[in-house]
Image 1 (cartoon, rainbow, N blue to C red):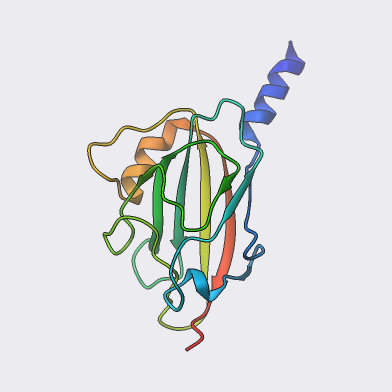
Image 2 (spheres, rainbow, N blue to C red):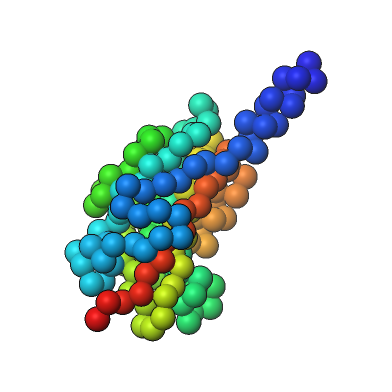
Length: 160
């Protein structure tokens, strides 16, 4: 019995492994996925999804931005539990990014190199919203529903 409890605790506390075929952890994000390119989201691979995952949420944030709390580049939820989120993904429910627009907005730091956190959450439910959520609304709604989470950090500095 104790073995089962320990096993369940390990499963519940395991981390998602978030990677991309476009850049490595703490590596440079290709300009294609930024304001200097076509500005679509890079492909994301998610490993170790719990078997009881009902939906996935994604938040992409730049904590280095000169905005209180950082700048949110992507807020999305109610994504089917899949291992691969393709480039230029259109699925689930798009939330409001830091520009108060729906969908992904590519990195575009005004100066220096910024860190971009691609945070992925495995949830035990699909979330219900009357309107597209912003980051804070998504975080509040998923608070008690996170089964596991992972983070991939990419870097970007404008080339021009």
